[in-house]
Image 1 (cartoon, rainbow, N blue to C red):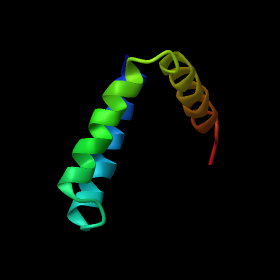
Image 2: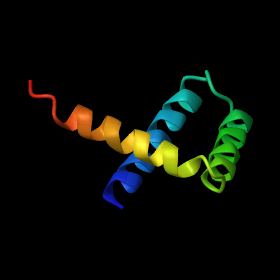
Image 3: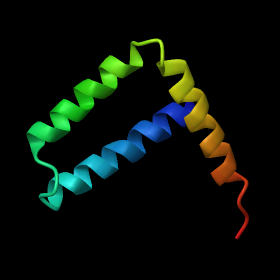
Image 4: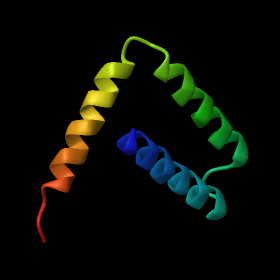
Length: 64
């Protein structure tokens, strides 16, 4: 749950920054969000979740 919430917040910040820099219009952000909701309901969603979890654990294991 924490990974999902933090991932949503991170993606929300990225979309917000794209909108502010005028590189991503509000209509593009809406379409991107709807695409994400539709992908979450498909059979590929568990694979995407597992891949993002492994990427998060990989990045979490990096020591500076």
